[in-house]
Image 1 (cartoon, rainbow, N blue to C red):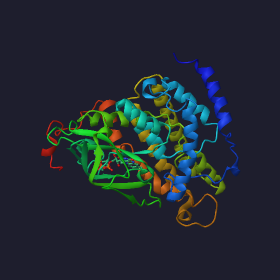
Image 2: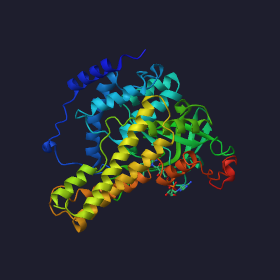
Image 3: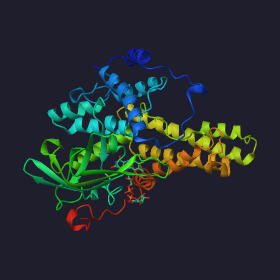
Image 4: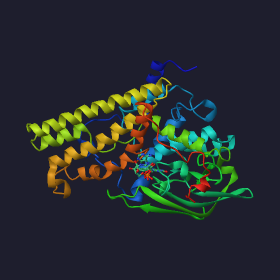
Length: 411
Ligand SMILES: Cc1cc2nc3c(=O)[nH]c(=O)nc-3n(C[C@H](O)[C@H](O)[C@H](O)COP(=O)(O)OP(=O)(O)OC[C@H]3O[C@@H](n4cnc5c(N)ncnc54)[C@H](O)[C@@H]3O)c2cc1C
């Protein structure tokens, strides 16, 4: 039975106070990071990852690592309201900033391997992922399969006790720093597209697996292309049954949509940052600027209220349903609008570093924000979900649903 929530919350607070410094909230905490994607060298990324891994290991060992996973899968077996309470308490402390790779490892791949893996896979991989002893990236998207992920064409062919993998993955966040990837590959080209997919864990140093960084317009290279040519994976690293990969994929993506957001680093500037900018430029008396600020404020409150609604639904064990799509769309839209208002305020000053603190930093927001319109399902896909499930409009025609993948002309 779950412990009393308030007593448990007090224990969490005491543990956090022993483990982390409090957030000071002072200006001398350092310059505000306005980057949406971290633009740092590989050495700096390793240093940042190491810092967060030390904290994550301590958290796991104290029993706060995988709060909502069932006990038999290596978690604490608590309701989602406890994860929400932990995130609320943790927000008062200066936890090392997390990263996409840490969230993918502990929030997506770890739980997926815990859920679908064998006892051996849970011990060898799921538990080390949840404790961040091993890091894992998501090898799902391909150049021809993003929104239509089930059309993926990376092939896995059995050869004795191994599978031989050939294909290409893309937009693989953090792949250069990951020890493993959760890979979706097509094992039966003659089955309909959702039915012939199998999931595997693949070691990122497997011969025949080549990782190439993608340079982003914001300067960093957190994404990668991953090329697979005759890369061999033992059958012991197959996750779930052959042909059941879509089940693994949809479970993994559902963890993504309902994650509590604990310990995540902030992404880009906020309404308060824009307000501070307008004040520093002496523009808060300008009626046009006031209108933009009011619009941004209302949208920030709406986004926060929707995120809270989704988190509360998850905490109550209810599926957030299309609410998660509304939240995602509001969040990516707000990120872009926040950058637009800042850019209007700064004018040409946003394009060159004139030495004024906090001005040029907005370029990092502006160049990163559009990426969030795509990540985790594009704006258009979120709108499709709302059109079908909220407004009850006719569904998109899905004429290829029952056609063998090999007849779709994708191979
Ligand atoms: C920041 C970021 C991080 C990412 N990290 C990862 C990762 O770690 N691992 C991974 O596997 N992938 C990752 N991705 C890939 C991401 O999942 C895909 O970019 C996303 O699903 C969209 O796929 P696509 O880029 O192939 O675009 P496409 O699916 O080709 O879409 C192109 C355009 O067509 C529109 N469109 C497509 N289908 C429809 C439709 N049915 N109705 C209306 N419009 C439609 C889209 O909205 C978009 O505007 C990441 C992407 C980003 C930007």
